[in-house]
Length: 245
Image 1 (cartoon, rainbow, N blue to C red):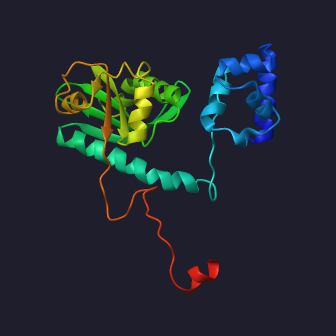
Image 2: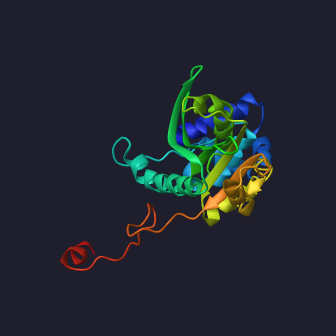
């Protein structure tokens, strides 16, 4: 979505609410001159947080969409981190006596999807549905998707002969300051996740641990190859670098 289109969307939604620019500005905690600026397509002058507040006031949502290279190139780059996270969580469960099913795909009653890691503990008949995230961006989408998968998981598990008596959702997040801050900002939304940190790890070792849902931060293992986004960029040296100066 380009800046001019964003401006038109803001104007149309504001008019639909029958608000003046000053009315929207007050609700979005910004100035009426900022609203006027955005509606004229000068969105780039403002932070993403400000634009999101404006859309939130309009009962709408603004999403930032990034593209790079050819189709799927960016997804493959980011998927390195995701694969490491799923692998780390799967090994913790295998060591504790769980059967694991990574990338469990399903098509049930017209609902199609994929569970990052479906784990079954034979001794207790507990089924865990894990959603692994390298970052927390769309909070509502994250919790909503996990809820849907928890609902469908018993049927998915039966295809492997797993008959569950209890289903627990798990949100597994790559550890980092930004992710932790995001969870803290939406504490009410994530309040249902009562098996956190050490209690979440206790649940993995002892699935009889009472609780509704798991939320844990997992430190991704270091490898000889740096993870996506961690490459250190240094100044070039030599004739080619000098020619670019």
